[in-house]
Amino acid sequence: MCRTGGFREEIGEEIRLSLRDPPAERADSRPQAGPWGAPAPEPPDQPPPRAADVSGHKWRRLSSSAFFVLILLVVGARAYKDLSRPEAWAYWKDLYFSPGMTSSLIAEADPDGSGHTRPALAIRGAIGAATASWFRDRLGEAHLVAGDAVLLSSPGGDLNQALIMGEIIRSRGLVTAVGVTDPSGHIRPSYCASACVLVYAGGRIRIGIGGSMLGVHRFVTLAPAQDPVAETQRTAGMVLNYMTRMGVSSSVVEAMSATTNVRWLGAGEAVAMNLVTDPVARP
Image: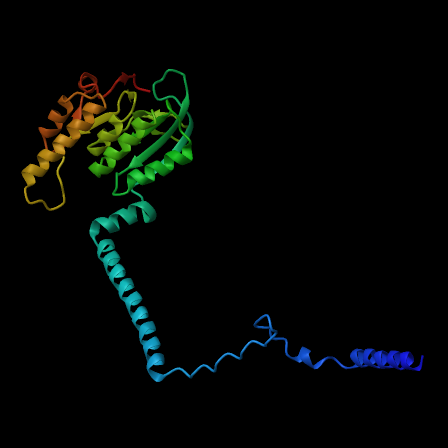
C-alpha cells in the first residue's frame, strides 16, 4: 500500500512538472531527418559572394538596360522618320486634326424626288489622305443600311482614298447622289469633280439630280516616279478596272484621259456612260 501510494505521488509530481515547465525539446522545432529521430543537420554556412560574381551580375544588368535603350532608340528613330514624311503628316492631320471633309446626317432625304424618304449622309469638301477612314467612321455613326444615300459635294482629291470610299459604298449597298442641303433640309444641286466621281460611281444606284455636275480629267501622280508615263498608264488601268467593276462604261475613262482640265459631262452623256443610272429633274 505504501509502495503504491508513493508511486502515485511520483506520477502526480511528474504531471505537475509537465504543466508548469514546458519541455526543453519544444525549443527546437526542427523536423526530424530520419526514422531514428535524428535532428536534421544544420545548413552549411554560405560563403560571402565574391567580388567577381557581384561585378558580373552588375555587368549583366547594365548590358540588358543598354540593349533595351538601344531598341527604343532604333524604334523611335524609325517612327520619327516615318512620321516626318509629308504624306504621313498629311494622313494624321486629315484623320485627327483637320479633316478635309465635313458631314451631316439627314433623317429624311428624298434625292430622287419619288416621295420615298430615306436617311442620307451628306459629305462635302476635299478628299484628303485619310478621308476613307474618316468616312467609314461617319457611316458607322450614321447607321446607314442598304438603300440609304450618300450625298456628295466635292472638288476631288486623293485618288486612292476615293477608290476605297467607292468600294465601301458599294459593299454596303448605298445610293449616291450629287447635291447639298439648304437650311430647310431640301437637297440642292452641287458638283462632284475629279476623284469625287470615283466615289459617286460606287453607288449601287447613282441618282443624277438635275443641275448637279460631274467633272472628269486625267489623273496624275504627285509622287516622284522613275517613269511618269508608265505611272500614268498604271493609274489609268486601275481607274478603268474600278469603273468596269462598278458597271460604268469605259468611255468615261477615255473622257478622263483626253484632258488635263476638268471637263463637265452633260446630263445625257453621263447617262450614256452609265455613270448616272437614275436621272431626275431639278429638285
